[in-house]
Length: 582
Ligand code: FAD
Ligand code: SIN
Image (cartoon, rainbow, N blue to C red; front, side, top):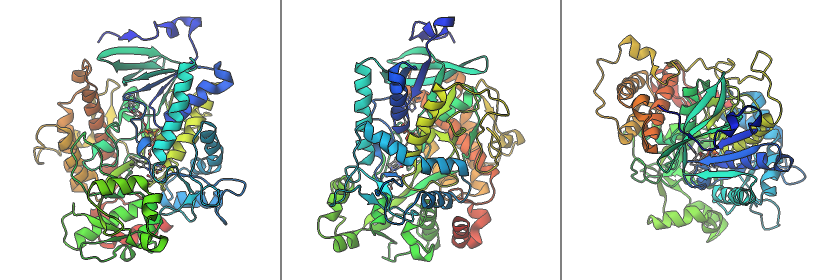
């Protein structure tokens, strides 16, 4: 295909006149914050910053975040007895110990610095009646340390604050902003990333750059039920993979236990998330008989780590003979009784309004809830400065895999990761880049500890983007059911059934076969001429699903969010509890 029109007039390729340009892809917390820091560095003289986002700036997972940002603040702002060490310990415990410990240490120790950074950009957090920073409790945190804004509207408040700052810099010329700009490809030259190609208003364009920061978020849309909005289509992971970057920990996809049980359609709005902070305030989970079942599965009951709660729901439904997609019930009535009438509406205004709009009065009745795909711990492997295995390519936020989240993310550690590692990526870009040799910082995968690679990803690739998997090559696919034609609905159903909360070798093999069959049709070389971003998204979703399933097939033992019901069947809840508390 002919190279697209250069949106910069080709200036960056003109030898000595090349600007030190950073292209930031994505307008969630990681991309917005990083773009601002880069634009503001040395009064804006350090780099030319271009922020590209495929929709409007507000279209992101970030915008939907409810619970808040975890951080142990300094100078009397932390809860009594809380400490950075405790935050580190909680993060490691929730991550089943498969975290990169240095990444966790950085995440937790540098949190206060980036909360201060957010505040400098105009973001304010809720205060308690005494005027101190209000701190919420969420599952698997040993102390209240969740900063929130607008009650349960943290993501929207943070995003709006950062967007206002970005728009101000765009107006004053310190940052260039392109919305509706769907990045379709990373360009490389001499082993480095050289820029991006993107689709805008049906036209393919290109931008050269000294550095590209992927901040493209997650991939919930590969599953049928997800808390993620429509933009979460794994684009960054697919872009990086096709460019040859290492990826890691892809078998670890977190399911949030409590999203409202409503019917969704592929591409439609996500079901309402009922924040973990509601359980932090005391809500409990009941089955259809009104039995509070979580204490049967974990000593911390509803405040166990998220993977445990989602898995316990699935196991409990199976044990009681209920269909796998049946809801359980979140009972928040005790909170209102204990804290006084009107508390739920004040503390959780978004959830309160949305549940009432759906016809529920949660002060008087339990809400039907089900787990939904929420957050990908895996992603593009990076070192502790956001560098990927390709020089000039950085990744931060949910698209990246620093190893900080291990096999299961601790609540409210994602917004934080976007801040801390988004900043670190900018710092790395602005400082002289070390050669990618044996002395350079390396990504350490949670499972294998291998630099910039991951033992659990076995798909092989040539760098034109065609992948073949070992299982397909072995010919194991022939006896499995015909998956029918590819569609997002079909992909979501397949992934939810076979690569969701409970997995088995047989189910994963079936998923692999179906995905391979679809991949033979939804091919990159067909999509390459397309002018419709949805076709690129389809391709990216399919690739991400294949990578996830491949990684899951290679991990036969349950850990964190990856649960093999066939190998751990007999001792399921106890077994996973022991791992989590070890
Ligand atoms: P995102 O916020 O998802 O932003 C990605 C951006 O990249 C978007 O602007 C998107 O349009 C753009 N993009 C993607 N592909 C392309 C492309 N091809 N070309 C151009 N642009 C592209 N985490 C917490 O820590 N605390 C919480 O309370 C919390 N609550 C949550 C509630 C919900 C309902 C959801 C869905 C998630 C929640 N999370 C929470 C998780 C957290 O919100 C996300 O992990 C985090 O916001 C990810 O930020 P990000 O900047 O990496 O990506
Ligand atoms: C929630 O509010 O339950 C989501 C928090 C998170 O994803 O960290």
